[in-house]
Length: 388
Image (cartoon, rainbow, N blue to C red; front, side, top):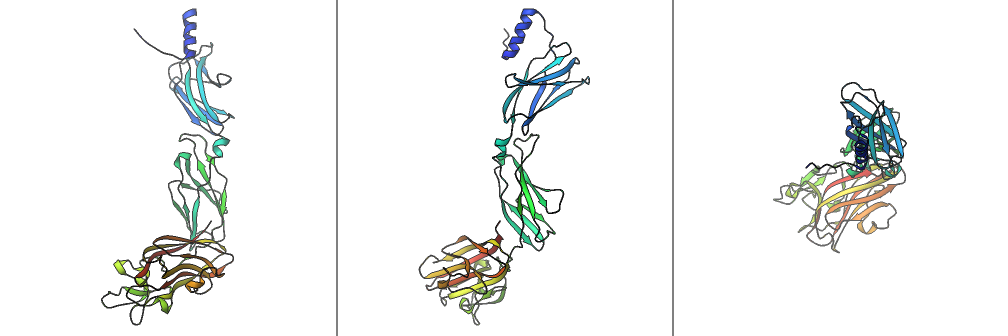
């Protein structure tokens, strides 16, 4: 006993064969594939045996729509291909038959394919830019990650005056452009393929940026450099005074002559202040000045270690101040010249957002007030980022 199955259409064809005698079938399309596009779809298949075939027809929407494509056989394996355009966004089941000049046709070949359009387009968004760091004529664009299931493949960056865009693949977190022209702009858009084999790329609208030079804090991460080392006996010169930062006398509590602001405990070469069996630090200030353009910024500071920072007897503030110098701890809050501040109450990353409403010089730093023993903090890095 032989068991077999067929589609309804094939069964109808078989009944015609059984009722009316032998029917001549043309070769059925093999290896049928669909390739999605934007309001269009491409279908491909092969034939390799029937020299009599003169056309193939594609049917969809339950046969209400169709297209006919003439064929000139090569005598060998031929690839059949058709692109159906101006078709609404949807998922379709396509039926394909081949025909000869006498009207004989093949059994049906079926393939399902998706057509994408406005609905898919409306789900797309530009890859977020985290930062445009312009330093000494080199622009570094930092990107956020994205959900790869959206079909995102990368971004195109078009510089002012350029005729061809730069492609940045989605797996690149940063892209560097050397010799970037200060005060010039660039625009970018994000590219998507709804399916890996899609024949059309979808694009977001362009977004433009005019990067401004990144404010650079000098000697702003561990290992911090010093201009002077010193300290208590047996401390192996653990303490020091930082290079490129202004440190007031109140922040210098170790050694003779005193130093302060640098702590090499555990070999960290960190910025640090401590009152632990040593004089209490009252309004110790460490800061440096930097030029900023009119823009929005974020100051990022990483506090690695600390003790008693959340107690009433300690006040430690990070601050950005218009002009030269930092206020005392009791004059930080609600001070009009303070552009941004945050009290340190523990370890971790601190972000201070601030705005410069004009080109200006600001002081960036930290004010420490310890009134209880065994208080300390250590900072590993400072960085100013231009906000987009």
